[in-house]
Image (spheres, rainbow, N blue to C red):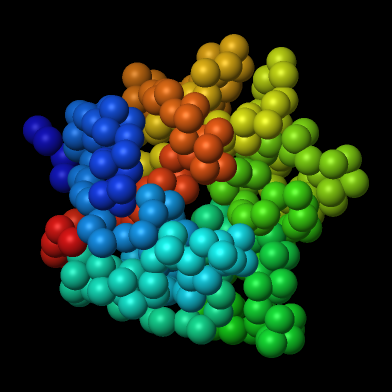
Length: 295
């Protein structure tokens, strides 16, 4: 007897990924299809980093569309997908969902979620870098935090220091949740003082697990930046000897995904664009009874 799930995962990619990296796109969609994960294409976007400009899921049927206007695209605004385009796409795909539009400037890649289990209850934690305060200079820090707390009710917030050499300032290359109360991190690529502060803050909520690699290089952060759905995990490969080490450790951390963890090689994307699989995908989990449309 087939057990029907009450929730379903969806993963969307920009049509630009399909156009410029068809081999990667085809490999990803074949894996998703094999494991019954629904996928689709976002049309009319300016670049393929759709995590950053599409809405962030709060919970269930609720999303927030932030203003996408990153400082690292100064002088490169042709690569900036407008907020209006993102809203139109999201409302087309999620006609029954609530999408709150916020004036706060923020990239989706700077929202990483963890959870704390206490007794029978869970508390969601939003982990961001402090770059969000730099991106919104006209907002007092306390006021900005209060706005975020209203947008994400029943969530705790944790703001990690921002390493200025990382222009994007995202957390999706710093950590990844491993169930409740644990996070997998890639802190050894950061300056010692910043890494120590990140570790200390994370340890106030979670057990911190370091990614086990024989060499921490300028692309090792990409292993953290994976696609993770209820049915499958896909880890980036960067063409280094550490690919196998990262995959082995991630398989060890997620034994319940036995036979459902893959690695897709994407060295050129990581090296050229500074992003990996989480950056390239817009994913969400919603009630299976809700209607989803293609963009």
